[in-house]
Image 1: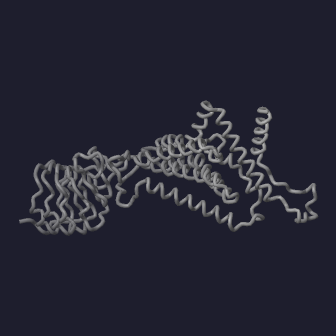
Image 2: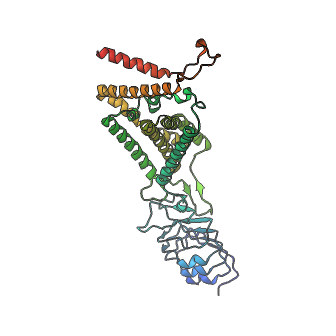
Image 3: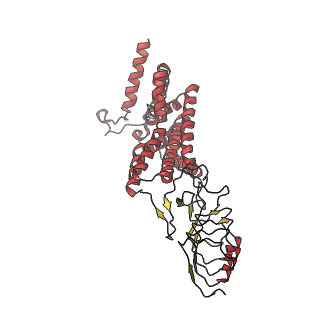
Length: 415
């Protein structure tokens, strides 16, 4: 006869060779059941679900096979369940309540052809006895979050630019604020300046560059996934030993590594996001599609780079050094537009010069337009305090003046 008043049944670390008897269901008063780190075989009996008072159950590191019984759904008092280190398969989401410490072999690689599927598990382990936090139950795929974040920030920036252009008068926004060098914002050493040109070939180069950068970033996002475990490179950094109820994280990532990550992103990515916003703002003032496209391109590519770098580091970085190395690698992808520009400089320098000159002409046209908008009309009376010697003339971007002198010199030499 089984003692129904028994509260604890612990036979861990004994290497017992047996099966779990169906009479286990008679221990209705049991609260803690630890059979871990033995050589138990067979399957988990359905009668185990009759232990409705059980609070902690550990069957880890045995040789159990088969499915997890659905009868265990009645065990609403469980706070700890360890099934890892076995050859179980099927769906482990049989419990109706949320279990705080729920560990199964839902990681990859798996020791079986039909690995455990568990969305409610707190930790997933693999056949190499390495484990990782399971975020599958609440986390969206990184690509989905990345696209959503990029779209949300882009829409927000567009709304800010529209509000400023719509509700602030010309007098409230000085010419110096409006006089933004579109060529400089797109990048004088970047193929993205071609968006300011009418050339079909230039626009093809821009589209090719965008697709190349986005596709490379999405490859890193894909292997950072917590849901697509078969294609994920996510590194398992935790161990759940048989002699402990809590798992230990072996990763050596500290706050200083993430501070270094933030500094790198501010230094190399934030500037492009700001440039993109300024281009979109200028587009709203000039009604310029080309400026608008340049701003959208800079903003989207920069945001994708930022999100990808953060997700990839979270997935595979084991130390502060890994965070820095991974960030540097992905920042190289963010500079493909500049590297392609340098390559074109050696392959087709004449065509590149013509594209650069066309972008310069666009900039001159926009500055002339801004000058005309801020020039006083004939009917405007100049105040007495604004004598000729004291008139404040609009500031002209020195880069634009230098570029115009450069273009004039090219024209004179060609003549």
